[in-house]
Amino acid sequence: MKRQFPKVHDLAPLMKFKKPEINGKKRRLDSALTIEDLRKIAKRRTPRPAFDYTDGSAEAEISISRAREAFTDIQFNPAILRDVSTVNTGWDVLGAPVALPFGIAPTGFTRMMQTEGEIAGAHAAARAGIPFSLSTMGTASIEDVKAANPNGRNWFQLYMWKERERSMALVDRAAAAGYDTLLVTVDVPVAGARLRDKRNGMSIPPALTPGTVINALPRPQWWIDFLTTEPLAFASLDRWSGTVAELLDTMFDPTVTFEDLAWIRDQWPGKIVVKGIQTVADAKAVVDLGVDGIVLSNHGGRQLDRAPIPFHLLPEVATEVGNDTEIVLDTGIMSGADIVASIALGARFTLIGRAYLYGLMAGGEAGVDRAIEILREQVERTMRLLGVVALEELTPAHVTQLTRLAPRARTAERV
Ligand SMILES: Cc1cc2nc3c(=O)[nH]c(=O)nc-3n(C[C@H](O)[C@H](O)[C@H](O)COP(=O)(O)O)c2cc1C
Image (cartoon, rainbow, N blue to C red; front, side, top):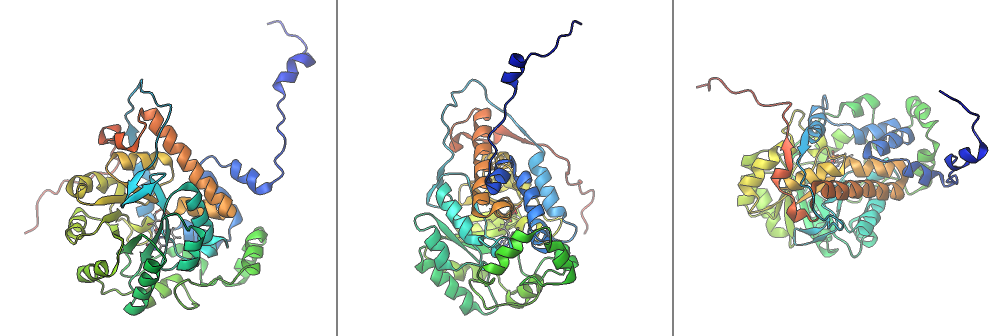
């Protein structure tokens, strides 16, 4: 092989020096190409108890890892030679339009993850044209969230407390503020065992122990934000000092039944959706009560461990009740492809919990924008590559669910 000295004029076109981005946050967020990238940035920047509270789930964390695995274990079946130059990612959900087939799930204690909290989520949702859900355990008030997303859709998530009048006072406030949908969460009769929180000694508000101080040293920005903004307070309850599990078990009513659900339905003027459906039988039972929608969810794996995988339940639930109610799905969504697959198998909508919170912890409001942008690009690209230009065109034939886990046949029924 004949060699030669490189000449300067040959090298010049190869040298591409980009103008450095001086805004550190923008640089950081632009470098994230996936939700997993945002998660890694979030982990670096957030004190361990707060990051683990968000990232972790219950017991051995099997529910969440199986839910994510179920999304990995699919095959997409594309159609070729379609004109996919323009693609529409919106349609109507629960009686009003959404620009994307996902919305922000209700999450508690959000300002503890990053001080901009729910308001950042509501602003980002407003910009993206998607619903924002405020949790009963939220750290911004019903009215402040409405003010942050005045023209968009706000949903309120209800936990029924032992003191019912207080829960229902919140429901009245949400109705008065113009929230259009009530999500009634039914999978927390008692708190799940979040072992990471126990191991970290996670408390509300975060305690300053020698361990947290050492962990804080490389994460000064979080602490500066935390100590120089309004103290963490709950939108809907008085100050609390203790662990999350203690708080949940003190407040939540473990006696709530189907009759209570029917009663709540009669109190609420808007759409009502039951969040935390985990079997076909329960899906049918709540649909018989006349609810407008159900969320197939195991609470992001934070309650019952080894729970049914919502994405695996979806096809059968869609067959059984898909014509009578709107099916929303969450738990484990880390990519736009997961969302497209869910719509194809019969979901009308999906919710993102951690995907939004990783963005929030990685960069406040701009980080939530980035998370939504990543998912939006993935949704659009996946649809185009499947040869569809509208959500209505997605069908079960576009997705094959591969089985890693299948129930063992029961050999003999016990008598
Ligand atoms: C940190 C955190 C707090 C949550 N708090 C609530 C809550 O207050 N009420 C509720 O109904 N669900 C809550 N959830 C569950 C979410 O609404 C949603 O079901 C779940 O996050 C979906 O799974 P994903 O995180 O994999 O997207 C919470 C989830 C997380 C991660």
